[in-house]
Image (cartoon, rainbow, N blue to C red; front, side, top):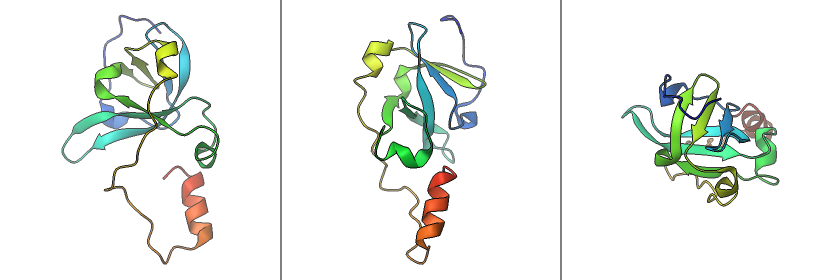
Length: 121
């Protein structure tokens, strides 16, 4: 990956587990989820995870960190480059899920919630 890359893919195409690279060419983690409003086409940023394990493990081992859209330098198919260094990425704030996030209904069983978490809903 080179620093002179340009965005060739829409933010709406970003998928979980895409590689995230720092400005100093270090692979710092993976996309947990893109953050924004697809209906209004508003890209707010990314939630990234440094260890890249199953979604369930993020709650205990590696809470996703928030990267604002102004810290995203380029979006390519399969990876995202940031404007910050690997060292700076270690100090990103935790990603807070917005209040408008989808919440599973009370009637969802524990198994359904667990399965949805594993599938990266």
